[in-house]
Image (cartoon, rainbow, N blue to C red; front, side, top):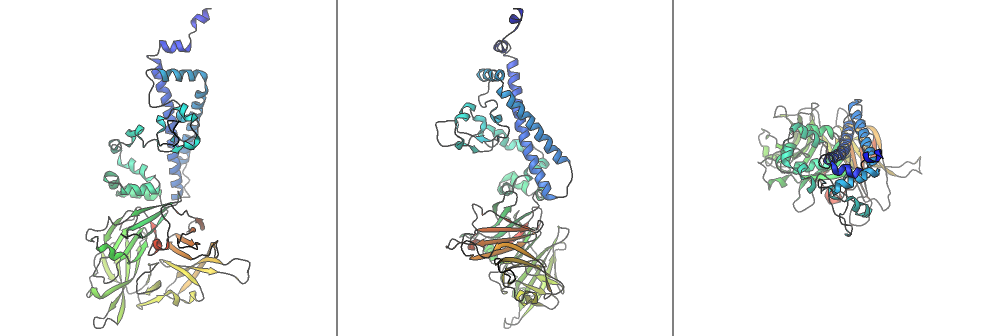
Length: 545
């Protein structure tokens, strides 16, 4: 009897101490849920960081990142288990019901709605009205748990719980502006490539931050292996753009170029570079407009950051009668300076029929042009449109002669379909078949050659099997071939109709010595028109023209 009198019910205890105990219990439970959310986010961030560090250096054996990742994952699982156990306890269910019905209960969140399953993303979204058929994008902070259990799984959508009206404070610019610049750079550099490119398009502070050398250096560390296709978009405006491929997400994004052009280049004059000869290396590209060298300056820029500069004019007499035919861009080993090797043809003023070749070099360290009397200049223009030379070639500065690829003895008998030059390396795409192995299907292979000391001294280093059969479902109409430092890219079109839809996109990563299939991309169909005049280049965030 004494025990029964001394024993108070749970409801009586709560009613008696509601003014003090109940709010503290509510606060503690909310802290538990917030901790679970926080551990989930930390696990995701550390996972992205570990993946980026692994890409930066596959030989890194540092234990701290993996230890942190393991510790956070363990804590997250422990808290998730605790939350799940609390949820199923009948006493706790009564307690939660009392809190929900009390005056201190919040109206914008139901307890344990994020912890229904430990592995369930905290950003799953349900229609708050079960009578509505179509789903809505809303924050899980506004979801009623009872409604969530009644709604069909088909109404699920995924949205970020930090970008909705219920978490407006987390997108408040004034709060972000209080963060240290170094911390912001570290956080933003971990974003996927499409989001990083989007930041560069944003106005005000985000765009200014994207121009910070420290931020670009951090982005370069996090994204060390990226490439893009640079060229004019096939539209009435002929917009210059870079189509960037994100290796991590196997997806494409693009950035329009031109806003960073020097002010001296008017918008009308930009079309002079539509059919320019070009070269690239080390994350930079070089454009030389067709026609006289005195008409338009030579441009060097970063096609990822849209930062450009115009090179000084060459201090030569009769500059107006010199026409560029070859250009090569060479990034120095220190990756802070570069050289532009330019080959031009000089016509005699009298009849414009006699011509002589000359080569000049611009050094970014000195800012000066000088004549080249020795060495080779490799053609950097991979897909010619309207130039004097019809095929990629090499210029010998000592003999002042141009050597076409078809003149090389090493290429005799090679049925070359496409070719590309990357510095002193020549990649030739050609068909292969064997009389000794007639059962092996005819297919495409890539032969890699290297120039030695002269333009004619070309030796084959290796054969790269593209594993692309010559015959696909529907005859292959066209194979397009691109290359840059570290990568080869193949587009194979097997459509029979006029849509010119490419069926296969294959990437060869020289560091892995392997091919991989790439996605088509929702906004990028890579038709013949889109690939006309486009070239492939290595991309780097920290490359400065």
